[in-house]
Length: 108
Image 1 (tube, helix red, strand yellow):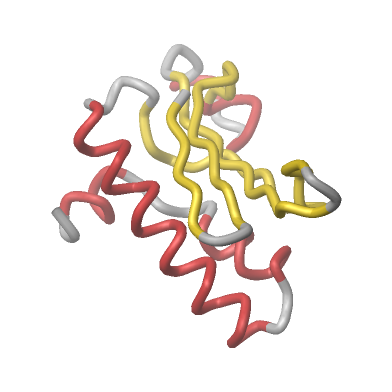
Image 2: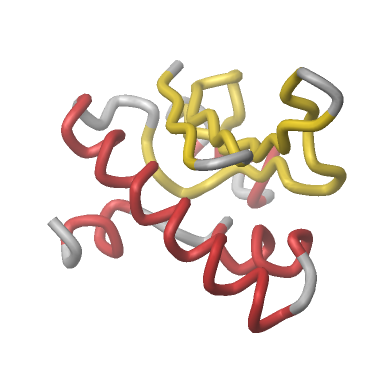
């Protein structure tokens, strides 16, 4: 698990056992685990999950720490921007769920 906190928002990126079959419905690729992100908001003295803001990505759980840190940074920046554009944290996260290794490598 790795996390990033900026102002009153926290994001956690972790392997919780999400697999291709469970998330994307393809039985042929059911061995690889993918990373899940969850956004939290600081309220009443603690971080609480933002409703409907936990999604599985297409990032393999095996990516290295540098890639995970970069993914967190990009996710946080896009979450900030897209929440304003979409006027919805849920819609912003739904857009972020499709990130994959190719997407990340273009930004490294």
